Amino acid sequence: MKRSALYLALLMSFFHATAFAADVTHTDNHVQSQQNYTEVQKINAVLTIENATAKATIPGASVSAGYMKIINNGDTAITLVSASTAIAKHTEFHRMFMRDNTMAMRKVDALEIPANGSIILASKGYHLMFMGVKQDLKPNQVITVTMQQDNGKQFDVQLLVMPIKKY
Image 1 (cartoon, helix red, strand yellow):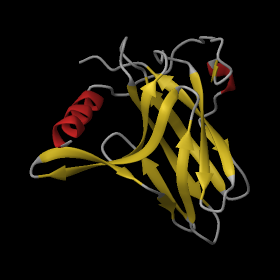
Image 2: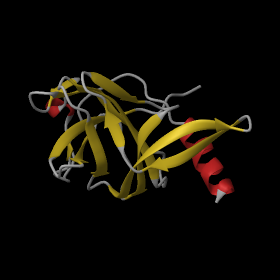
Image 3: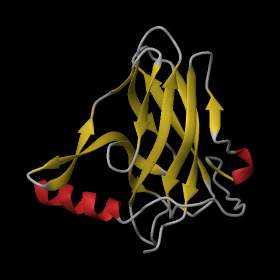
């Protein structure tokens, strides 16, 4: 188990997001063109999403990750308990951390966005993990992720797929 988690963490470390490019359309209704994506997504009176992105995949890869800033302008904390998307068999919240001088990754059962606060999903911290990706994620596609709160309410977030950064 430790070896597979380390392998997955190393694999994901090679996929860094970079700049936007041109439109791409796709037949899956959950994969749209860049025209439908906005950097700031107002979900409701209290929730705002900023800079939601996902990593492109190399051909044949079955994992990817999603990043964003989730802002809660309300007076009570919001707890996210699940996420799902049509592009992957499983979507989970994960957290990267250091253990014995090695990066490790662990599933997180819930994410809490504090009242009048925010949480950042980023490559070396909390993030969305897409497992069992059903097709290659290509730069400039927009995928939809449905988030569910502990009170049963759901909302959709649009993530722009970013190109793989070359070193």
